[in-house]
Amino acid sequence: CQRQSKKTLAGPVVKGRISSTTTSTEPLGESLNASLARTKGAVRNSRMVTVTDIQSRVAELQKLIRKGALDSDIREKVAGVLGRKCGDGFCVNPKDYDAEAKALFNAIVDPRSNLAVRYTREHPKVDVFQAPKKTLQLRIGDCDDLTALLATLLVAAGHTPELVTMQSQGASDYSHILLRTPRSGGDGMTTKGDPNSWLYLDPSMPNKPAGWEPPGLSKVLAGHGPSGITVKARTFRVV
Image 1: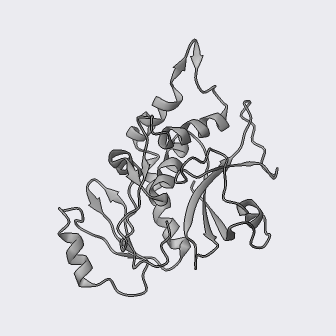
Image 2 (image 1 turned 180 degrees about the vertical axis):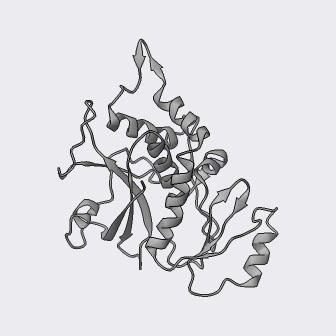
């Protein structure tokens, strides 16, 4: 999800359309527009939205997540994961919200899952924000798409995740996005205020389990200076 070197055009794919967002300070060339328009009809009825900073960029993802979380098809996917039976009970115990978050995370990162999505880079000059439902259909996406999909599933299941954007060493600006969601015990009680009160979820990092976070991220979010590989970071509420 390195995007500082791109002349980026991003947009949610909804019902076969791509609503476009440019984050470039340089106008998008006619040749690129024409090229996109000729790509087997992939880009149709584009809507240009100028994005000037990370906050306005994240706002586009927030819109997709909030809309997707109300989709009955998304709710059905959540039910398929959390409603699965193991013997006489459920595989995920009711009100064990940490286990719910981990189960939904594993559902999209485990290649054996019928909801698995493969991390895949996109056009080197174009950044497309896919609607979560579209990501499930395509089964591919980058860190924006995977994070938006997981956030949508979590919100549909009653969770209140936050988007976390970070700048890593060697990047000139924010270059990665992931999630964190409040931790809880099996009794459903959250532990807000505790240093370990957040469960970090990064679905775009291969072989990293639920709970893993980029080195130094928590310290930077707690107000310390650059730490580990993290230079700076911000959080954004989804709901």
